[in-house]
Amino acid sequence: MNRLTYLIVLVVAVMLAGCSSIMRPPSATAFMSSYEKDTAVVNLNLALYSGDLDNHEKYYDHDIEKDFSHSEWVLDFSEIVFWNKGFFSIGLGAQSVTPFVQLGFVSPFFGLSAWSSIYSPFNSGNYLSDNFWKDVSFGTMLIQQIPIGNKVKIGLTEHFSRNGVERYLSEVKEGFMAFSFPEPHPLFYYEVGGGAFASYRLEGVTIALEFRYGRDLDNKKNRFAIALSAVGMKGKKSENEKKQEENRLMQLEKEKEEAEKRRKMRELQSLEEYEAREKTWF
Image (cartoon, rainbow, N blue to C red; front, side, top):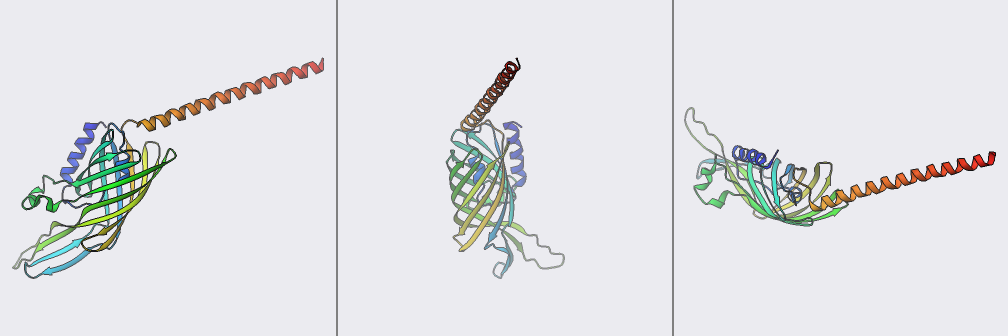
């Protein structure tokens, strides 16, 4: 698919997905893989969370007569498409049901990224009625990466972010046939942390494993994440990848020439041995 097709698909996904504004830090591997790709880099990411999670904790506020339930996601699935121009990349994606945008500086060894959740046209009215930034997830990440050979890369990350917990609010109604429908309202906290990742490049796709630790500064809790990523290269090859491909082809050509020389030498040696035997007979 071309660039316009990816953009249309993601815009539709963002409009349909925007049921929430909460998210956690996105994949570092996907962002770093976008360097020097002219069209698109597509990432699919599955993350598992653990630690001091706030799941299904309920309490009742007698003053406002509403029942609250906190629920922090244990799993999420993300997809994002990056477009790159030199040392700058911008991406549009969704983490579970949260659309977000990510951009920043990227190079083979160093990256600086920032992201923010996006208001969906279907639920923006819930958030614009008060403070615009009150219900937004955002953050920034510093990334260091070291290539090991042509296929393996390892790296470290440090991040500061505003993450969210989904809070469901239900009004307590009295009377016959009185129903209460829970509505999602995000509950946010600030997090600081770091992590590590390793990636391996296969033919046409890069597989990566990421680990991340985060410290919830508001609630004094520890959270961990482990994520599996698949990054598909849809753009042109970078200059470094081109050079590696040229060197590989040159090496193959050199090996082919050396093999041909050895074959000719063996044929010549066999011919000389044959002629020597013929002379002995006569």
